[in-house]
Image (cartoon, rainbow, N blue to C red; front, side, top):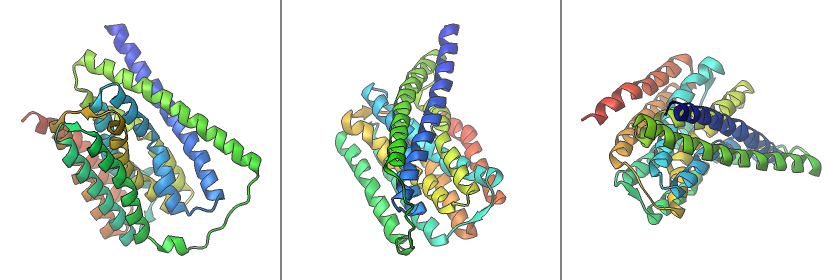
Length: 319
């Protein structure tokens, strides 16, 4: 039993490390291709980078659903939303620096993120996700992206500077990106197996391990990419990545697995944790929209909201 536990913990750490490194490489080289082709930083962050940094959750969704462990899928995705909106946003001003945000942009993207969460929780509370429900979740993602794009149309009018690139460079970026995505898939499978083992050994529900522990690991790509973007003063890319990733988590990530393999989940746990994720998201969106900046005061508030989940949620689950 002791050896099994040690092996499972080691596998979890190694799996998350592989997920993080592979996802970082995949996103880095995918972004280079996108920017060379002339995509704006904001849309690159909102769509391409958010999908890339969310690839661990997407692969986890498919693999866990295929293995019949739906709680890992939903727990990881909803936990990632809370982690990214509160903890990641909270760490940015302390590790990357302070910067301003546009009220309209934050309000629109934030509203889409909250709506995506409400939709996900309303489906998850039933205790199962059918193919029809999953299709609805997956299809909602491009709708939210379209709404966001229309509301931030000014970016489309900005002059884009296309950087010339050789075919050889494109091939190199493409190959490394593909290898990165393969590494993510392998890491996701290792992580899922270790979570299943730890859940059995410690008799902790898979949902809770996924929500509180696994979500931190699969959110590491967002931390790395966002901090890199802020330090390079690519603030729009950073905002697009964090909130865009949360929209992906609450729609595409949760739905893609059940779309192929319908799942049953712990509806009560999903409802309680999902409602807290909605609360945390509203606090972050309102704070940023009203203050129009990401500073240390806001960051401290977001970190407190995240930390409270470790005390408030277990208490609520006892009743």
